[in-house]
Image (cartoon, rainbow, N blue to C red; front, side, top):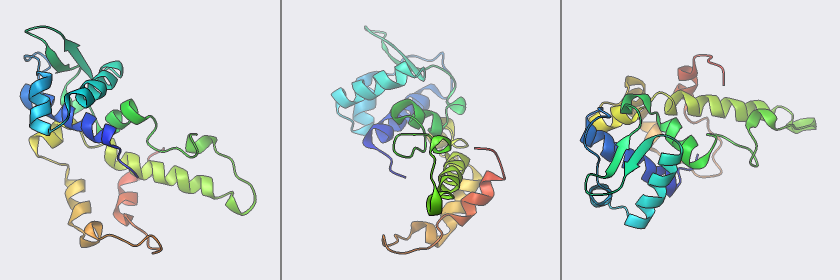
Length: 177
């Protein structure tokens, strides 16, 4: 999975707002300049990312002396998956299509199930980690368990054919995609 700069910036913007609000959507607005300075995001890039977050309903904004950005809902209700979907679209796609819409024939027919399984595993992590958890530095136990495996931190050559993230499959717990 590739995390684009757009997604990375959007998550960091939300984290700064959440940290300032302490999960209260009624707090004072956070100024763009403060977010940009705290995260080292260029103002133009911040404006663009914040506009996407606003269109997706994750933040509200106001201009003027009392202006800035606020979360549209509590940070505990905004998952990393929500942010990715807001900025990039579906978590998993194949040639621009949702995995369930892709059809293969012959030897490739089972490939569709692989793409669906991948999406289930991505969801198992990204839908269960919230902006509030990251902002508070309190990641869910399953994240700690997954990253405690030394293999999680090792790079694998492109040609290596190992099964990565075996523990993630267990997290899915048979949930539907």
